[in-house]
Length: 156
Image (tube, rainbow, N blue to C red; front, side, top):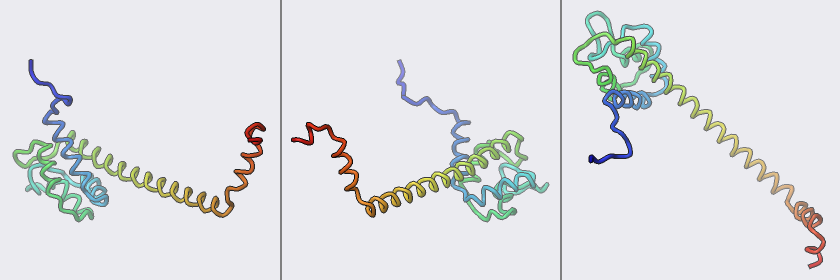
């Protein structure tokens, strides 16, 4: 009988998608937004920076739309994801996956900002309650607890 592990082997296709997502998550937010604009406005290719018919890679498309970032890991992940052997136009499926991961990464970043704002608000509320408690004091609370205690405990 063979050795089994807790995690089944991931397919090559899944690993390539995960690598692409990790590379996208490393991009700055403004580059992700520019890339979304760029893939709408340009013919996107795989396997090269540009081609003779005017097609561009997603990173150059982002650069032309204001995303001035150079991340070689993205270019490698994109070409691996697309199994690029020579320059060609990206398929509709490849562009759909790219768009979904760009939008998902932007959504995750926005959700993280919201979580940070909530945490900050909660910390401010705790600080305010602590200041109010220090100002008002807590003796009144102890007096009320003593008054509400059963009589046999008060006589001891």
